[in-house]
Length: 67
Image 1 (cartoon, one colour):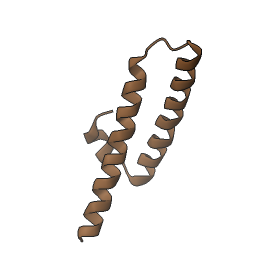
Image 2: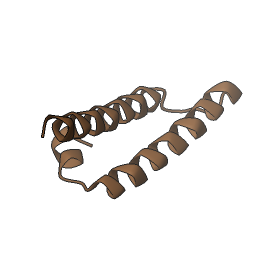
Image 3: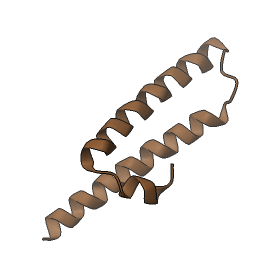
Image 4: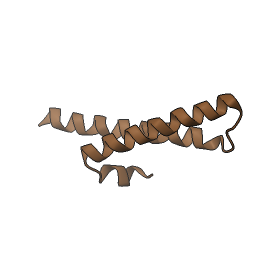
């Protein structure tokens, strides 16, 4: 998911997306440890998506502090 799409989401939607992505990352790590992971690139993409969501959250917090 692109950062622009994430920025268009509400805080509640971002929280839900974060929970889903973290759950997916947990499952991917579990598959990787058992040798069942087919697409290892998906691990990297999930981590990046989590980082994007955290960045957007921090941007919003910073903009609220400035006001």
